[in-house]
Figure 1: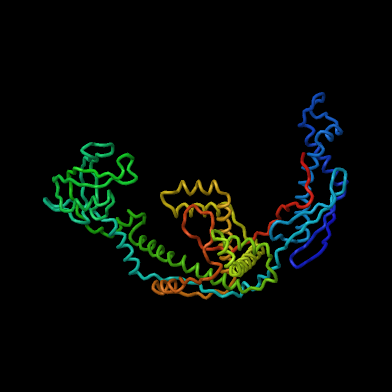
Figure 2: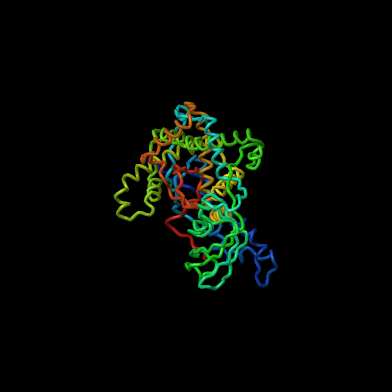
Length: 474
């Protein structure tokens, strides 16, 4: 194979590839040997069909298959040997080709620009740590205790009030007729939470043990008996018990019920939880500072095809007129995103950053935990959407790069209080946090908006597409 660079126009290059007919014929011979044992032709034993017969019967199909493979392998090799990283799909223009002929074609490719990443070590960013006051930890634990009260039997003739637990049996009817699901035993309701049927528990305020009370409520839209949805039902309730709440005692036993070893361990866990809540948000601020600094890096030229692709993403969902009006602004945003992506990717490649399958699965599990009760739906989503998994892989890849940058760049370590953290985060929540951190439409299992990630173009050799002359595959 002989490769020559025909012309250089900035990032655009044309490479002429020449493969002599002897090499092409050797590929054809190898393919004939491969299919010889699988071809069944009348009058010939398997594996004994003469070459000339195979050539007459399957020559064009074999050539088409060989040509496709040679084009794919040789174009990839030509780009790699000339250290060209394509920005988008290279195109092939066939000049000479055919059975028992030389192969000559042109690869037209737009190259990714060379990016300098040494300056990353000079980036300055704030690295926050939050000191949690013991009072904050105690307050959080007290709030947990309030939401998990103990109930004790009320004294005789106690009238139920908001916050009490009422235990009752009931029989319900619609238009004086019983219905499936209209009977309940030992039903428990905490008055004031309105968790049974809308307005139901308010009607039990003032009842006492042993009393019978008729309650009316409208059956909800998710009621199993479809013909009863929206109808009013009458519930004859027999109150079997009234229980009053008492504050949960905060001790080692309480801590163990929450999965801690003891109260001291619980305090440590809660302190870490509060710290992590602020740390995660503050880490995003640090990341944004780094990305904004990378925006200032100089890149000689940004490929037009990448800008066009990014503008399409930015204008998704917009009318044609609105997209045209915003095009200039979108192009500026696109350039920033692409520049940041190129710098991050180059830094990642130079430092051999990789994403392991274990890291990817950990991220999938993280996404699943974020949607309790919908775990199967989330898992099915990622199993059926390879593009969503690829998006997650990109997220993990970028996070690993950012963490490595933090190790190498110049951090300004700041220990701050919870109040200071809240103030910093509030100040950061302005509508102009940066073009590259805006919401981006991605395939996700939920409708929650995701933090925008810069476009990282992985510098993998792509299979070029062919243009001009088509090769028949009859």
